[in-house]
Length: 164
Image 1 (cartoon, rainbow, N blue to C red):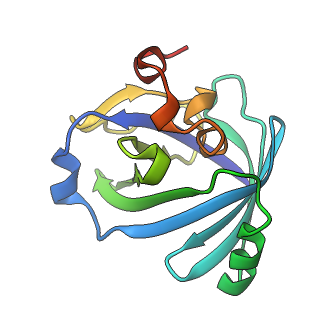
Image 2: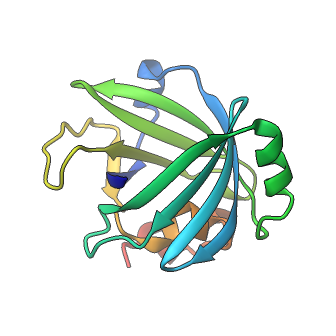
């Protein structure tokens, strides 16, 4: 029940030739408290309910609990979520046996493309392909729960290029 991941901006389209077929994801948040988030997601034709805890100091790991629920239940829960539903397409790219999940956002977050890699342990080594850009692990504005409240279209140039 521990999620360990690194998050990066994507610096080029080179990943697209390596990617799996994209899967549409729509998600909302029932709760976006800084110490815990409760997410409802429809991924393709499947529903999920996820609870995430606060990240550690480096932002690489946190508690995560997820259960599959009926898609109809997820649709009903999405109707009572906080404002700011996220719409994105997720692709997967294998690099040296590790899976990068690339999220291409739509709607108010159009133009934002983020890659994540989940690891088995803190400090685990992994290959960084050339299309990975700036690491944004632990930068709260890149969390989906924050993107839902403050979408990419409203970011200043400084926010788009800064690690702060």
